[in-house]
Length: 70
Image (cartoon, rainbow, N blue to C red; front, top):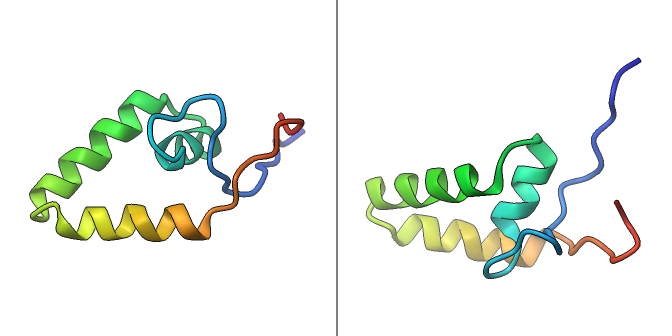
């Protein structure tokens, strides 16, 4: 039996700012702290500006997970 992933949504449980990294971590089944560290590292290596733009775009495009969803 295969496990199905729900759609990519911003996290309510593991959010620090908008829940984008937490939502990506939940979707991938990873630790949210690792996703945040990876995002910051990639952003710093790319002069930070593109990372801020990508985060803002994901914040706008990713729907927020509803409180009753698991």
